Image 1: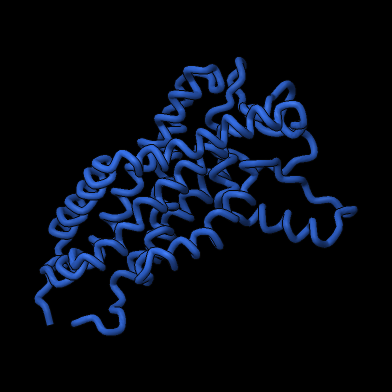
Image 2: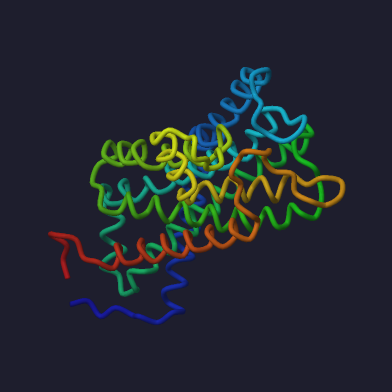
Length: 282
């Protein structure tokens, strides 16, 4: 049995080193940076111009390109978390992770370090797109952007911690990508990122009610709605989000459920890392 130090200071130092390693490792690979940021921007441009005439889902006078800004930010957070947490599988294959596991440091530092490092990368990528949206006039400039910054940081931490939950038990990148395609991408599609979430009505077919219920219980729906609330601010200072007939959670609900999701995924990822896997040395 290894004599592990359970001190908080030691664990935080290890977490900081691992987070810093994730940051340096990611930005030393330009292709990963371009792929994580470029593909959502390409989708934003293509879908924004392609669906401009057909879009009738947002507020008064809102274009699809403007409506899709929040969904693009969420997609950047999602893609970046996938690219950053896949390093867990690579580290296990290369032997680095085994070295960290046998080191005299608490195992929870691995989950925290990976989560914070990936979240910082995702936040940086999202902020680049936010600056681009500000430059082209798709987002208004103001003090509300500070709230958006904090909200994006919490959302990035939650999504990255969820990526850690999926990557930790995986031993192949193929299995990881399959899990991401089955879970995280549908979460994004059913979040109101691409089309508004309809309000419940008694005239809805049962299939539509099921989809609408999934969208309302989807944690990412609150992230996307929160991004819209904190970025789409009118001249009078009020948020302009959605239109009549659509379900839009309040700002408070978005903050609350995004924080709950981030806390929950951090706890689960820490528990998974602390739990010894089959064949692992004690």
